[in-house]
Length: 220
Image (cartoon, rainbow, N blue to C red):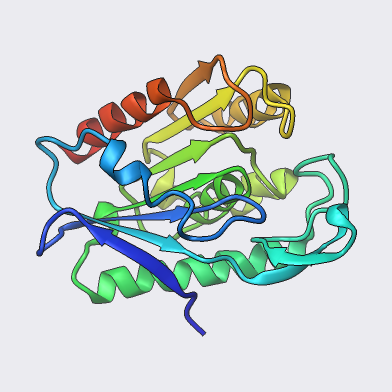
């Protein structure tokens, strides 16, 4: 069943879609306010799609039921993520990509974006997708199932632009974890636009400005 979503379009006839995944315990409404903060002047019409993650029991939070893209057993992020739920959510996000294509948006005009767990799913899905996507916006996260990426990635997205931002005072996902993912991406030949910010596990105005610049560049 298709994930429920919140949608916001900057034009009645968008030609670009951004599918934006929230973090653990949040929902699709979490990043809706960011749209009005982005400077999209000069960009084509964009449909922002904010899906709600499924309800899962999350081990690290005492088995509590909450919106989550995958189960996490401890803070060894990317090394103990539950593979089954990661892959289930990847399939869910692929369905959203297919829906955007059915609505007339070309694959290379579809971008994936995500924060924290949503960032992990952006990398998990985008780098394996069999058609070239427009770009990946990765906020305060990491690569899940990292040891499997080299063997499973699809060459269609070898040159897809990647924005990767992280706070240097992140107490939830340490920046060293993101730097490990950055090193993996660079080793595999991906072009990554890396940004480091004086912030915790959050998004700051400078990052919003940098995301605006990234969108303008890749959509030009």
